[in-house]
Each structure stands twice: as structure tokens, then as C-alpha cells.
Length: 473
Image (cartoon, rainbow, N blue to C red; front, side):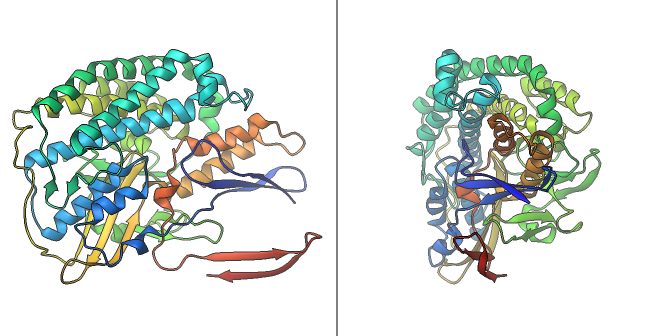
């Protein structure tokens, strides 16, 4: 038995490795995605006031801090048992759209475009953002400008681009100014042009990747995402819908606050990343995918003109369900268009400058859940508090974790197709890495724990013999 190890996996957020097991015939027997960092952020939060939690949990990650900020603020709303002002809801949505745009732009332009535009088999010394700048300078600048747009939206609303404490239980700290509104509206046309141009470029390159689309995580699974009451694309405050690989409805209008009724969290000895699954089916058969691909699969429509037109074209790839994880890239571009269209709609609302943006109340509950669709998928924050509002227990179910089973299935499929025992060119290993990058995992967000973490320590002698092993289940 031989083993190939890719350590670290590059162009993702966080630290991980991939191990590929070969049998005696040189064929891939197994493949695993090992998340090797552990942070345990839930434990850090115990003893803090739930009112501090949005600003604290925003520090989980510098890539998607707004997602944690708003999920935590929504949990605080539920602990207060209040309905926040409509202006605050709209402002939260605008900031969340800014978050989605900047995160999707980072994933597509900086992390995945080197493979898509320079080639999976290109020189690894050039297959990076610097090589992309040299080969496609205008496209790279466009990606930088689009990400900057999303960050500027966040800064205009929350006074800083990352780790803002603007979202609070009961609403937001400050309203939007007239100057801020005009600044955002003034930037949208350029952002829209970049998004449309990039979409056209990407669709023209798809013909080059038929093989990758067939083997980069193309398999049956469940898909889960939020939808509006009419079944439309939703990111902030919907109910959850689950479909199967044929498009058949498995469950609909699930309350996010009751996630523990239908989502289980398994752990394995070889990774710090939890493996959520759909409880009615069980583990591991209840594997499901979340994120842009899942959201477009479960939604009946987007609800904006440009995004709906692109969604109709996107669906031709699957009829009715797009199964290949390679098309996460495509789905992100459609969501960028949707976010820009919805942001414009919200900014033009007559009450967007309303100064009533916060409901004031005391703690009225001892337990609550807040949820939304983060860039990488559904995010749950679950808190328990005691008298005085101090947190006694926290669980966060992160999108990257929910994609753990699909990521492992994807790299196994890729490895079995591309990796051969007698020849291992770098481009083959890069394709295995790329299978992970398609999901755009955020490992700093996702390496948390509910209860004990399984741990395995092995001691090897100089001759490679296993001397001892200690395992904690």
C-alpha cells in the first residue's frame, strides 16, 4: 500500500492536507481531506454576554466576518424576542450582499482563476495570482475592483472592512447616511459591468472543461439552502429546503431554529472538521451539499432579471439538478449578479435612510438559534444563556463542515480518475486540490467542536515501524 500526501492544500483559507491511498496495483483505494487546525471558538465564548457575541464571532474569520456578525445578531434578536425595525433588516441585507460579493470575487478571481485561465497543467510557479496578473492583467484588476466594491459597502455601513461590530442584537448600531447611499449606488454600475463581463468570459471557457465537470465531484447527493416563501433564492431570512439528486423535494419550509431535529454532526478520527448529515437518512448516507450550487438547485427562481436569465441557462447543465461541484464557480458568478441587483433595489427603497434601526429590550429567552446563508452555505449560531445574559454554551454549524462529506467524496472521485500509480504529474495532484477549491472551504470558520474531539496519536520508530498508538474516541 502506497500513500501520496498533498500538504498543505494551497489556495484555500486555512490549513489542510489530502492523503491518497494506493493499492498494490497502483489504483486509488481511498482519499481523505484532513483539516489539521483546531481552534475551538465555541469555548472562548462561554462566560461572555450574548450582546458581545456579534463582535466576538466576527473575529472567527477575516474572509466572511459579516456572516458571523449577522448570524450572531440574529441569535441575539431571538434571545431578546423582538422584531427588529424594517430599515435595520434592509441594511443588514445590504451588508450581507457586500460580504457575498467580496467573498465570491476572492474565490473566483484569486483562488480559482489561475487553474481556469492558466490551465490545470501549467507551471505551478506561475499558476497563482501573480502569474494571473502577468497573463491577464485587466481581468485580475477587475477582480480586485469587484472585491474592493464589496468591502467598501461593508465599510460604509459598518465603519470598517473586516471585524465590524455594527450588527447588534435588536438591529444595527447606525443608520445609513444619504452620502453613503449615493456612494454605494455610484459604485454599482462598474461592479455590474465587471460581473457581466466575467460571466461571459467564464461561459466561453466552459467547453474546455468537460472532463473536469464530469469528475470534479459529480455525484448524487442531497442539496440544502434557504428559500423565500415562494421558493426564490434567499440569503438572509428564509426557511430551509432540501432536495435530492433528481430534484425531488425531500423536505421544505424547515425552521432553521430546529436544525438539531434534522441535522446531525458526526466526527472522524482523521480530521478536526465535523461531518454534518441529514438525520432522517443517517450517517454517512445523509450527505448533503450547501453553498451557491445548492442554493441555485433548491430555488425555483432568483427574483431579479439578470440572475433569472443566467439561472435558466445554468440549469441546462443539469436538467433539473446540476450535480457537478465544478459548477460552484458558475453559481458564484450568478449570485454576484443577484446581489448587485438586490442591493440596488434595497438602496432605492424610500425608507432606507430611516434612523429607527434598533429595538431595545432585555433578555427574554434562555436559548436561541440564528441562521443565514453565508457565502459557502447555511450558517447556524446556537446559544444558551443564563440570567444576566451570559453565554453558557455555544454551537456553530458552519457551511464548510456541512460540505465535508461531499468534499471527501469529490476528491476520491477525482483521484480515481486522474491519479495513476505509475505516473504522478503535478497537474494530476493539482486537480485533486482543485476539487477542494471548488467548494471554497473556510477552515478557520469550521474547525470547532461540540463536545469532545476525537484524537489519534501514532508513534513511529526510525525504521517506520508503528511503536504505539493512543486514540480518544
